[in-house]
Image 1 (cartoon, helix red, strand yellow):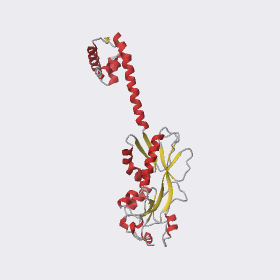
Image 2 (cartoon, one colour):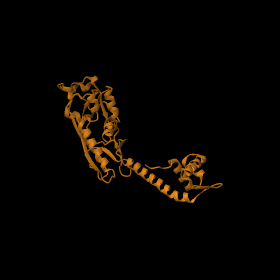
Image 3 (cartoon, helix red, strand yellow):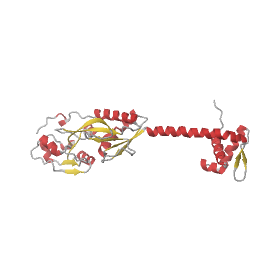
Image 4 (cartoon, one colour):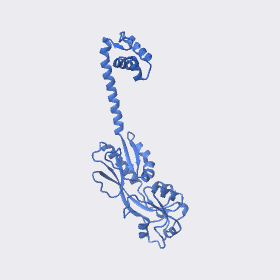
Length: 308
């Protein structure tokens, strides 16, 4: 068992010897000069040696102090390096993931607790942006991208294929496609503006509901607002079954009928030279498993026969 003087005494001595001043040592350690003098005096009593010659505006280290000082200095420097190394390891175990506001709010936030349970030593920070972020030269480690790519210069890990279908509040009591004519269609503006985006016009081409104006209804600039309107019973949204899976499971939304439109896959993208490859692979595996578990199964009509 080590028999060492109190750490406070050793810190006070090391600072006083380095500054040749009790006052400057006190300023560094956030105490009074009297406290430094007291700690040094305790150490001198413990060692049975005089460590400083007290002068008017400074202190001068004695020969024993000159022998002790570099040992303590190097020891405290080693403490600092070790602690900074541990802090660096903690920083390297954190990841910042960017995704659209809807994906963050409707998938990542509800699942973040399971990530922490599975990866207790890793911190996942979420960054919401509807505009694609550049990974190069930024603090973003990875991003969720929707589409088929390619994303040059990035690793692209496929996660899940998105599917879209009409969803609404059960309060609307929709059971027939023809009933859509009695309710507002809820639209949201796609940020990527691809011609093959799942829209009500594309859905109408497959469903062929007579008399349905697929361009009419309420348009939202944000898909989160569109789904909130659907939850409030304000209309019917054509929405991602993956992102509204929690609401479908809870029964706050229903998918009354099809057809279901095939969307594009989600991908996790990141730089191939990222120093966090191990953490990124762990993140990708967690996303794949979670999104596969949430992959929508048959829900149309909740077992009712769908009538045209």
